[in-house]
Image (cartoon, rainbow, N blue to C red; front, side):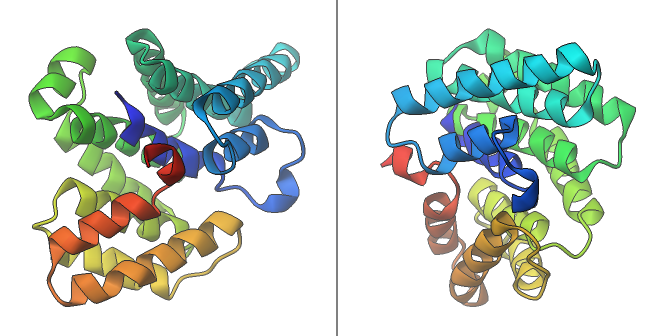
Length: 228
């Protein structure tokens, strides 16, 4: 029911440098998002990530990385099990982290994906009434995430995919971000993936074919295999 929001959370879980991933909550969520063959395996990995994050937080209360990954994991669980309470709980965590540091690009992207993903799946009215999702809030967070993301390809690349999926009529903005991603740095695996994804939708964007670009974007975003 809430699968589109998983797309962004999956990307957030895999955005850290590979050297930092070693049996961490982030690594477990990356595996769940990109390698799990089915929902059951994905849920098992998400559960492990929550337990790992809880252990870190028991030792270092307020640890930012563990808190963010725990929020992502709870969001995953909510979407995989269609638990509205988990979905809402994940946003509470993201908003708390954003209040602590409004310039955290990862947190802003997570908030953007939460709002825009819910709207994509449920429609504006149902997403707003059932979850409190708002398109304006999602777009504002997406704009902030890309602006704060520096010269990494991850942020404009994912921004382009999310934006064209949300509004296939606004080709100009999606193309601007895709072009930026195509010439940005790729310090992590996800940066490289989002750069390639952005480059792949550029022909459709340059041809002003927003519908075709949006269709491509849906296939290029994480959890594509589970959506088939």
